[in-house]
Structure formats: structure tokens, C-alpha cells
Image (cartoon, rainbow, N blue to C red):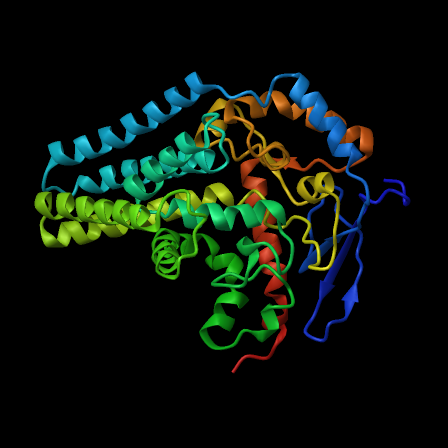
Length: 378
């Protein structure tokens, strides 16, 4: 890219002393180390041009028939899983049903994601109702809490101090946070690339806990009264546990719940992991323009219809971030327009295979934990 183009990436890996080095940025926008930052561009005209092209192609038009079909299909998948559970009865074969229901739960999560972005229908109320049903009622995750959190992510994707999805938790994404970790947390950070996928087995439980905490503190976007959200969650928990305990012996019930929730968390986490991990990470003070903030921090995953279905359309992450309300079915048609527009501007357009996206994410996590591995142990 031309040196005068504000889209050029500046990569910096900051150690515990705050010093930085500046290796050459990967042309895909991937960070070889702890932090990647973006130079700023003061105009939004580049995005306006792309938006006109996308709108002219009719890609932002809602597709209510397709949305209704997707919702019905997901509901049938969920219903079929629970029907199989009742038919099989008190048997260890229920662990296979646990895998089916984990898949169905995540698909429900995708429908909630689409509802939160108002992709499904034109009306806000209808989308909110679908989000509450497929989120709170069907899988026990707070729709209002998630919308509030996810909107912050979309406003500042991968930005240090602004994106809640990269805040230090069990996993650390910012190289400056790693040296502060000690004890068990330090051990996890030191080996977080190795432990990442095993830790996703706990992600389902973590989401449930975060939902309860958010409701208790009133941290939701309020698509419905707090009491309605809480009631839907209670109905889900009561129905889920009642059915499981009535059909299975206590031991089988315990194992079923553990396996089902673990696979749900793994699938959910593995679906979102390729999207931003290891991509550009703007500093908190930076103000890149909207187009570059979204494109340079996002990564697409190649694949066909099977990939689109399994990942819930999240494999078109660049297009989704540029046009969050675009119906999922329109994302493949938007991709050539977005890719061509990025080529015109000399912007890197990151797209890779699913396995390579995981490889890049794990490489970033490994680099972030490097300062702790360099310290003498014991």
C-alpha cells in the first residue's frame, strides 16, 4: 500500500515496560504479536460509496419469508432433539442427543444474533420477540444483556479498552495484560493457546453466569421489561432440568447436562473465534474511520453453503460488520462488492480457511503469553 494511505497498518508488540517494536504488518492485517494498531483517516466517504452500491443492489432489503423459514427450521431442529430425548429414555445413548441439542442450541443462538441486529424482520418489536424466544426461552441466554454487549463490540471491534470481547478474562488478547497475570491466571495465560479450545467447553456455563449477573445488575438493552427476561430464563431452566431429571437417572442426568452444555460452549466459541482473534487491534485513543475499523479488524472464512450454515453466516464477518442489519442470506452476494471496493482502496481483505483462521488466532494467543513463558519458573 502507498505510504500516504491511512489504511496502512502499524503493528506494535508492547512488553511489560511499555516499549514497542514495529515489525512489518502481515498483508492480511494479522498481528504477529500483542497489539496491532490502525492509522486514522478523517473521511467516511469511502464507506458511503460502498453503502450506495450495496443498497442499490437491494442487499439491505429484509427477507421475511427466508427469515421465517430459518426460524422454523431451527425450531424443528430443537424440537426434534428433545423428541429424540424423550423417545430414547434412560440410556447412555442420550449423550448423542446431547451433541444434537448442543448444535441446536447454537443454531438458536445464531437466530438470536440475527434478531439482535434486526436482520430477520423490519419491525423492532418482532425482532426483539424472536430474540427473547430463541435466546432466553430456548437456550437460557439473556438477549438484552447480549445485545448491549454486542453493540459495544460492533462500535469498536477489537479496540483496546472499548471492545468487551477482548477484555482480559480467562484468556488475554492484549500483550500488555499478560505480564500482570500471576498464579493460576498466569499459568493459564502462559499456555492459553494450548488451553483455548479445552476452555471453550466452559463457555456455555460462563454465558449463563454472565446472563444472571447482568440481569441482577440491570445491565441490558431492555428489548423487554427486566421481569419478562428473567421469567423467560426461569421457564427455560425449570423446563430443561425437569425434563432431564424426569427421564434420566441422577448420574446420567448430570453427565448429560455437563456434555450438552460443554459442547454448546465449544461450538458457540469455535464459531466466533475465527472472526477477529489475531487481527488488527487499534489502541484506545485511535479513531480509524468506520470502513477501516471494520475491515481491518475482521476476518472471513472461505467455504460453501455447509460452512455458511454451520457458522451461521459469521464466516462473512467483514460484510456483517460493515452492514450489521443485512440479512444473512444476502451476505454472499455482498462479498464481491466489498472485496472489489477494498481492492480499489488498496485495503487488505482478510479471508482464509477455517483451520487457518484457528491457526492465526492461536498464534496470536501464543504470542501474547510469550512474556510469561520467558520468565524463570519456580
